[in-house]
Image (cartoon, rainbow, N blue to C red):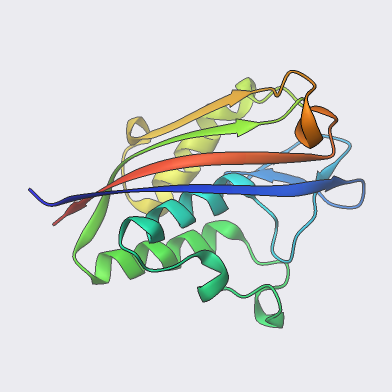
Length: 159
């Protein structure tokens, strides 16, 4: 059995002028993430992990932040495109393990919906998508609520 593993990371600044979108879910909060697309750090970390597993570069290569066509883009749509890239090469996602690091808001009430959205786009079961949430114990830029970051590890199987 051919398997590949990749890891991804992303961080975006919190601002008062944007919605907070994580894993394709709009999370009620007074602050949102600033970025060229919808700034969904969780989905971006997952995409980078998928691309990294096959040595295909990173999301900036496929969706450059200076390209106007990706301005405000829905990251789940971008995830679908990345999934097609790996599928075209004969690979599929076996499972994802991820963590979102944020002081606020509490993400537990949204985790199942996030898992379902990501699984739906990747055409896998929600039990193949692990999403955890933690704080940074008020340390660093995430702890000071200047931003939110996410880490992801993805295991790919050759079909």
